[in-house]
Image 1 (cartoon, rainbow, N blue to C red):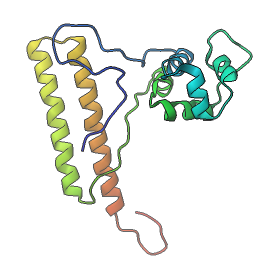
Image 2 (cartoon, one colour):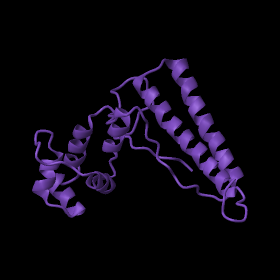
Image 3 (cartoon, one colour):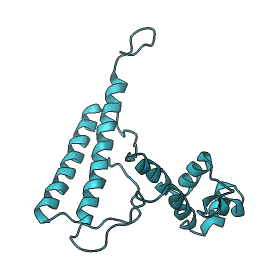
Length: 175
């Protein structure tokens, strides 16, 4: 099982090349603008999928229009439809957080989840060792970021399975 996080372009493992495009440093309003405008067919196609007026959505995602504002529900809907979580990442970044996608455990066997976690941590450690051995580049850092997020997700899946295995005493009060 692998966790996935949004990376706008596939990262390269080479030591050279351009840095992968990342929306995490965008302002929230810029992230909303780019999310809406980069959708195939643009804002009109996105508005149709969201079942909202295209002109209104255009104004809501514009960084120059003060009279219209994207609601939180609309921001969530836009990210669900586009599959682009740049707004979420921009909000987290602005508040000093990092987003890690939560993936439901694919097995009810906690030991299998344990070994998945160990494998994810080993993958991350290999990427870190490679980065230090070959010289840290933007691409090697991006690779480490992605693998660290996968390891974190694997840890969270294991902890969820452990919590689910906790016996609940009579009365429904958990220990």
